[in-house]
Length: 347
Image (cartoon, one colour):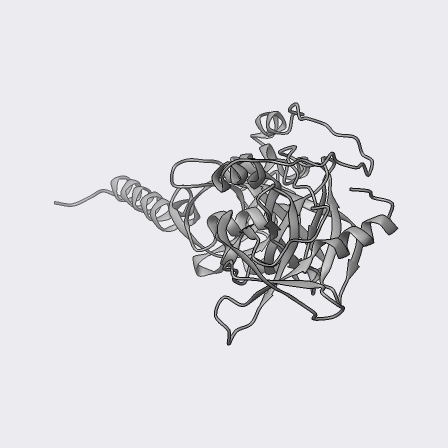
């Protein structure tokens, strides 16, 4: 069977279209890809060194922390913006669009709804109006932007009851340097307007810090009030206390043998509760500046509140002795209270 020239040209065109669509750039759209690196707050790298720019998202430490926690080394689906399909920069390997999880959650939209980034309108095209809706001001419980003195709250009941009341005041701290997470620890709120406490060494080496206080809920630490490198504590503030929950600082030091518990994030396992007693008073820097406890702590527990059975913080979990089972140490909270009195923050 012979083809005439017009028929042959038609078949060539059809084959060209099929090959182009099957092997060209459009095959990347809506395929499943693996995230191998979080470059910054609005750029991720997937296989074959392809860089995806998240349209509508600004590069912030909060958005980078969110992406790292949620999609690093996980599968995602990429969708092109209908008007921005060119591939500028980074050796023609940078593309612009939207990232979805396998259960169809839009990462661009989640970052904006959680207020982890402002809206970058310069890079948005076909979804501008929808993304503007994500950034509407939702009602929040505003608190006074002043350093106040929270009322002492004494709880009673079982440890389980205490944990339910106290747990919302405890959060994970992510320490950032040049936009990369270099460490983590624990902190807790002592004021309704966002003042928190942790260990100095949790912050050490960082140039910015982010707290994570719920499922995909982040805030930047905006101010450092005071710190003591030797006694290993730091006092800081975020914009707001999101759960309106605090833990009060104890009026008196605990007694040896007194029961205590710790709420923290050992190795990133958020809101872990361990229980023990005050084993002894120890002098590490100044007289009786630490208590020894047998409640378990691990890396990531640093900065956790050590709490008595009235629900008040008696110490800050700080360190452990590697060659001594259950020999853990926590800074006497009275030393932190002295520093707060100097700052005129009465508790």
